[in-house]
Image (cartoon, rainbow, N blue to C red; front, side, top):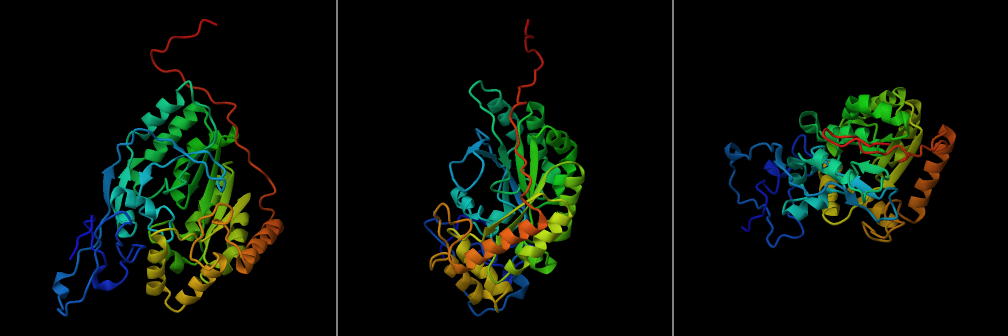
Length: 367
């Protein structure tokens, strides 16, 4: 049998989903020359079941911390990702294919073999102090979640926010974790100056669906509680009802927006499920394992919204889709936002207060 670059089994023991993990398999990344497949040899070896998958954390020695973006579909030019991989294990995560660049699987490897950037704060400060640097809003968590479980211990995101606060630099945070409320002591004073905004991703109100689809993310109720806590602290908060999955959670769109508005959210958005590269196979495996009765219907609706394919990467349509179903979803979203008063107020962040704080040993200005 050919071996994968991953040290994890390609399939969970017994061929089914693993408790607490999103992906069903450890499908080989697209850049690997060899792939692995499981086969039943007819021997019943229950005493040799594979061990449970544990999270392993490694160091990412990055040389720079700022990522540039030129996509017309997103409203920011720069982003920071404190971590590679994400323990939340959301099966639909569009960041999964990035693990293939590391020679790892976008499947179970993505949620069990994580990397953190211990020098993130120091690298950020160095870049912000450059005379060539021009401030604009940074997105924190545009790829993997900055508040995934290992952040409680490693505090990389916290260290980044401390630097941004010291420089009066605007930041927009995207997360599906209530751990973001830990940093209200930094975010609230920044928000008073127009320097901070938080977007909380809430895919479903159904706890059971969330448990299988986003196994290690905060429960939906805790995410709504985070919206309320941030709002009460004066931090402007948006809700991302994303992704909307046809035939699975799309019927919850209005309910998610209603609960978010009641919790104090002032803005909202949604994204139609994206299935680029390895995600399309990983998601179909998940569907057939957890929702076999709906799998064909969900995939059919996806193709109807993506020009007959499961994914269309074209700018302008990749986030929202096209066709009758996509248009209906967009109309429902607009009507719900109008009724709930969402998106009426804008929160434009500012870079006018940006300045480099003095360091020990810096020479003072004479004038």
